[in-house]
Length: 223
Image (cartoon, rainbow, N blue to C red):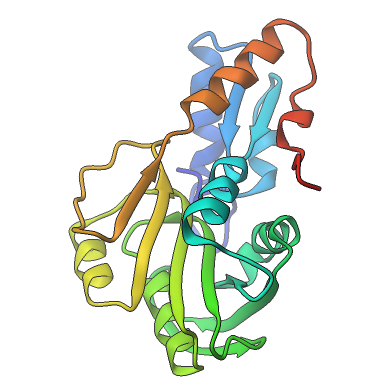
């Protein structure tokens, strides 16, 4: 329901607000959310909301396993992911690129244009949410056409469908790196890596319980 955070056409409900009301009515007195699809969702609740981020888990994996360095490029697949991708690029001290696109509907893109240099580089596409992986695969195809050596994708929440499996298996994406924030029943041979965010959530809960700072949890120790 996080995608239904605004009224962008007639007769469309803002279901995110309804879900927020239901959680509060059920008795919740504090909410922890991870990589919210839109910042305004925090304002939908009448109780405290802690917005957590999965990037500490991703950053560690990208540094240690994928070996992302200053020659790599973090790519935002659309304008909505620019802030998230820019944060990754800053923490990894690497390049940054954006794909500007004209969207027909939620899953179909009419045209796309790459802003940034990816020739001969390892690219990491960063997004908060995917279901069909259409945007990721289209971005990967464009990056390969522009000369990218390897393409990876990092997504916080993967609500993968059967169509996503087909798209990813036929795409140049080396690996989709995601988290276990939602159950994942889609098995993609060799292309899916699920990282556990349980320790991150547990530490956030411990800090809240003890009245400690939660924001310091997301400071990069290497910077």
